[in-house]
Image 1 (cartoon, rainbow, N blue to C red):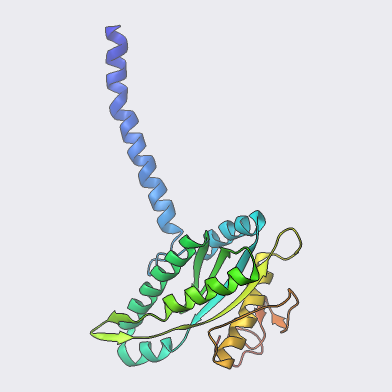
Image 2 (image 1 turned 90 degrees about the horizontal axis):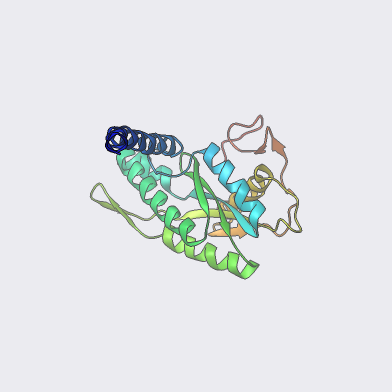
Length: 217
């Protein structure tokens, strides 16, 4: 009996060490799947989780592009721009948590999200909530910045619709671009039919496509 107790006593520190190491590794892996500035998911992590969300029930895919961000960055510097991006990331995270969703920073001041919605009315309500959150002033570098965003969204029902995440993101991107051009907070796709041609998976006319014009995206 005493030998058993001795063996257990010797094993406990080792087991504890492995437990701490395992926790440390999990945290390192999770940190690697997060954008270092905003804390939002990276593209790979977002793609994995968003695909599962889309398969599990009715959802909405959104593309979000901040308004007036370039002016803030150019006029007040990158520290102010980074503060706006961090605040945006926090607000998007709260919104996603309230809507059983997830958010990714696509790059620069552009984001994408997948969230649970149960009807078109529910989608419009949550877009209004998201808009109000993103329009709240950000205090940074001794200034108060009001940014706002243009949002494009498309609803998806796995029972009746057939589309993958990249296709849904392209549709949401089309609506975001139309909303920005029209000066309205958001627009939603009424169908899963593309309205714009794509080049290498991106909306034609976006920077980075063969025919890109540098238009706002």
